[in-house]
Length: 178
Image 1 (cartoon, helix red, strand yellow):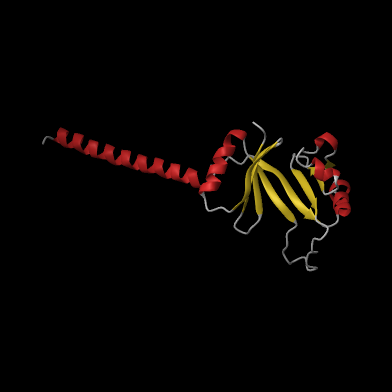
Image 2 (image 1 turned 90 degrees about the horizontal axis):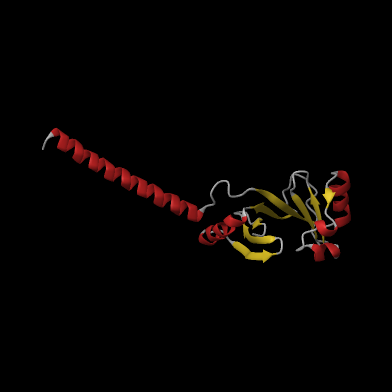
């Protein structure tokens, strides 16, 4: 075999190896995308919900003391209007648009008097995604080992799915209506 023939044969072998590597990389990327969200899919924190024992004190703290805008009337999400009217939920919005929901839980056990003791009053943390990414998010969650609480659900304000982080904290991924 001539040197040129050897070079051509070696080039074909290299091309086959590179194609195989590329195929494996594509398979890995596909497998990875089926078990994890692509960076950038989560656009922002949409809202965080806290359980509160004393709604009046919490309303004063977030509205008067912190100076956050309380959502009222048509500003209240349609899914929460009934609860807001019943005095069970109050919504505030931060200057960057993050919504803070306060859920009244009058039987909530008070936290440990030692502030170094950890506890949570948070109900859930919600991330926002684009409407066209929501079905992909649901598929990834359903294919993973993540414990889904409930959903997907569809509401006038959009769609959502609720699941737990490794420590049992409730997370929502939601989108606006299409």
